[in-house]
Length: 165
Image: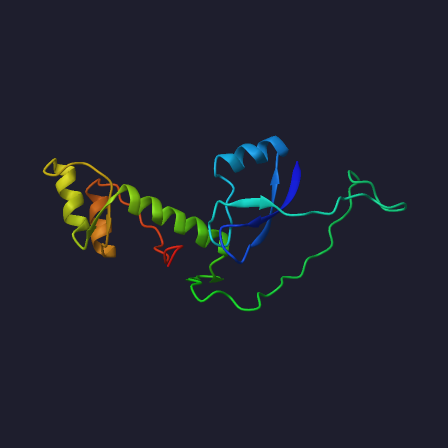
């Protein structure tokens, strides 16, 4: 395994983060495929940051020696971003928010928005009255439950603000 300090060059802030990869070739392959992304903004323009080599000094354990981990105290963020969406246990982690923003972008790119007609359009597609395709829109809890009881597959995802907005 190889550990890299990374920085996002998608924005002027150059978010810093780290990642573990099988080896340097695996990292390069993922980077070229656009699969290494910033956990803060979701940007895929990522570069390795300058890192200090991990060379043990005399009297310190070797790199492969088993050293018990010291307990880590959680560090509170100075000020969470304004767009942080609340979740049951507190603010949504930046990496999760970035993944949900990517999911939203893919849904908006590949599916048709049907608004509040979601349940009716899903039923029309099920009956064959409408072309089968990916759709998204709004449905009440009762409408979603009724669709599932009718054998129509529906899924709900948290709809976070767009990454660009």
